[in-house]
Length: 112
Length: 114
Picture 1 (cartoon, rainbow over the protein chains, first blue to last red):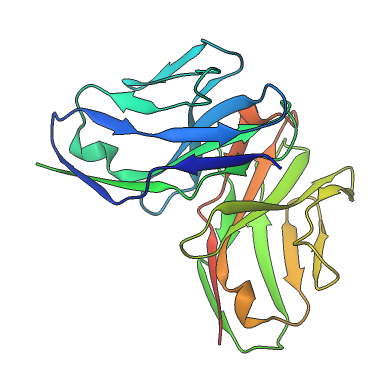
Picture 2: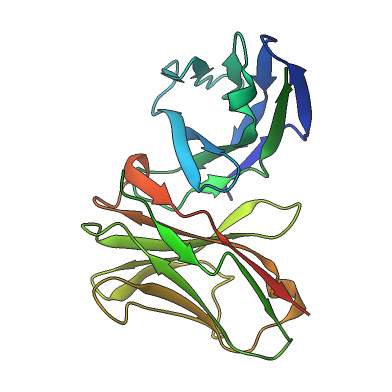
């Protein structure tokens, strides 16, 4: 079945450092890809998405590009802030309304 | 901004006991979901609910689990006889349109079965 693998955490970075969180997927079709973020004490929130190959999703300075050839959707940010400290989840769905398949989540801590 | 509310935030129960996890979805939403995350594992889909019936469920969602929308505002997950392996963070979610682009999650209920 479909699956998502993302890099293990925790990841600790200094403020203004470059962030990459790797995510690869296995799917039979052409899934939509998502990054969700969970800030402390809050629910998962959609951070960005991409629905077809070579699409780039972006939001709040974060970006991820749907790479069909490498089945990847890595999350990047050029300069992280302390407020970016959260757990980041990569996810896919076969179609727009099918259940999400998540990775384990990667905890990011950004220190000043 | 409207949000999905889950109560309680933590629940401790004894093995074999029944638990009910409660969720208040966003008021104009019509599609409701439960996901869970066992510590150290992936977030897993349990069930989706629309028009007062289950629309899809995973193999995890066996006869021990049930969902209900008892009134116009609450959406509940009942585990009839809890097992140790039911210990997990349970997330409720709701959507107005049923699409993942418009899915809103609650902050979760941490269930600990002793």
